[in-house]
Length: 245
Image (tube, rainbow, N blue to C red; front, top):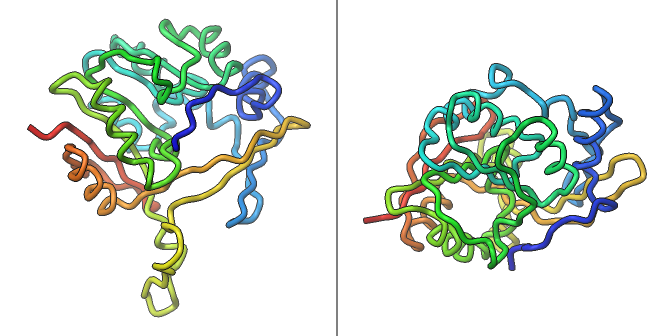
């Protein structure tokens, strides 16, 4: 089942890091843990990047976004601010109260503390923007039908989802170039994460990285067409999902 909750300020490590960086121009280490990988960290400064500093996939998505745009998981608001600067109509949502407050202070015009999957959240958009591995919030493959049902409620007839993700199969590549994946186990792109900032430790959460072929299959089964727009430099890609007619 997809998480439809909001975060509490005292369990919001990324929001606290974003808030600190905005207030003081610097932040401590935002640590990331997983049962599948070694400890990592997110450079908080990168969450405040300008459009020129964004990846080609992100800049492509921003150019393609038209009409009434929903920026999902907007974080510090970098994508929303770039869209506003381009004169586009954008609505930012995030489950982090500290991130939402930072976005307001940074000048994002339309921002709300909202979970995309809250059944009370009903509106209509021409473009739904899901960047920075936007597929992640789906959590698991089994949640994809629920995700597409929600998209049908939010998208206007000619609308689309612009989403990026990554194919993690390269992590299972053998020396001879073959891919060794346990087909009896969980899908290899289903990852668990937990974040910590200073003494603030969030709950563990599911995060989905999905390969384009698998996403295309689930899209077709749920009434959507998946179009590969552009591939990045590190197994990442941008996809356009639109309702089949």
